[in-house]
Image (tube, rainbow, N blue to C red):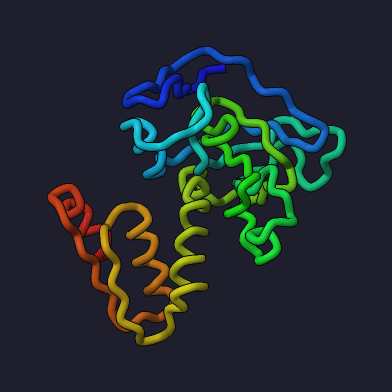
Amino acid sequence: MKALVRRGLEAEQFFYEEVPKPDCGEKEALIRIKAVGVCGTDYHMWTGGITTNIPIIPGHEFCGVVEEVGSGVSSVKPGDKIVSRLNIGVCGTCRSCLSGNPQMCVNRQCPGFKRDGAYAEYISIDAKQLIRLSGSVPFEEGALVEPMAIVATALLERAKVEPEDFVVVFGPGPIGLIAVRMARISGAGKVVVVGTNVDEATRMPLAEN
C-alpha cells in the first residue's frame, strides 16, 4: 500500500512510499482509510518538533470503512463506517487509567506516535476502540470526531460552559472553530474569537457563521 512515512526526527523527513499492508490480528480490524485530518502535532513532526518512533506512519484523526476483522471480533463487521479511539495498549491499572483518563496512560500505543497511523491506505487497529458512524456522516466530517472529542472534554466537561456564559476562544484554527460551535450549542451568551496573525484572520469569517 501507499503511505506517508516519517524516517527521521529532523524537519521534513516525510516520504511517500510503498509499504507492506498491515496484517489483521485476532482482535483487530483492518480499516481502509477514507479521510484523515492533519493535527497540529503532525505539523510539528514535519518541522522536527515531536519525538516519535522511527520509522512510523503518522496520522491519528481518521475515518474509514472496515475491510476485514479478526476471528475474535464481533463488535464491527466489514462495510461498517468507523472512527476510532486511540487508547491502544493502555494498562488499566495506572493512576491515569484508574481515574478515567486512559488517554494519559504511559503505556498507551497511540497510532501515529508509537505505532503506525492513518496516513496510509490501511490501518490495523484494536477493534474495541472502534465506533460505528451513521452512513449519512461524510468521511471528512468523521475524521473530525477525534478533535471534537478533545474540545468536548476541555470545553464542556472541564470548563463546563453553561447558558449565557461569556466564552473567549484563542485562535480560529480547526480546534478553535469547533470550540466556537460547541460553545454556541451549549447556550453561551457571547463567544469572542481572538486571532493573532494574518493566517488566523483569514479564517475569522468561518467563526462568524
